[in-house]
Amino acid sequence: MFKISEFLSSQQISSYFSRLTAKSQQHISEQIVEESDILSATEEANLADAREAVLTAVGMTHPIIVNQHNVCDLQKKRNTYQIESYCIATSLL
Image (cartoon, rainbow, N blue to C red):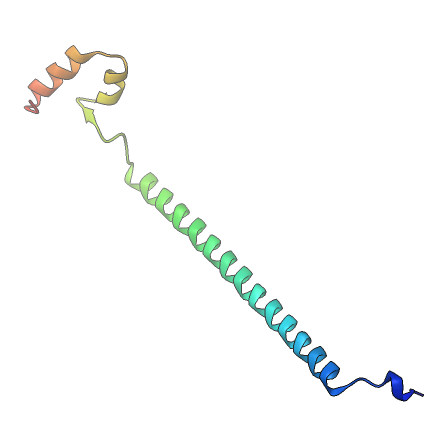
């Protein structure tokens, strides 16, 4: 069967099982991290979908609308006269 020279010492056996245990614990912790990452990503996607659904349902429009005119678009067009007249008409100035 085995020769005496082929026998493992108690230190070799102990080291083997120690490495085996460490490897299995590392694998388990990696699975837990991966599962929590997947769960977090899923929750984030669900929150983004819910946020989008609420904004769509509420009919969120551009926040700066005066008399059905988008003030930001007027500013981009550099139409400050119209902006000033709308602000005076609505008592914003």
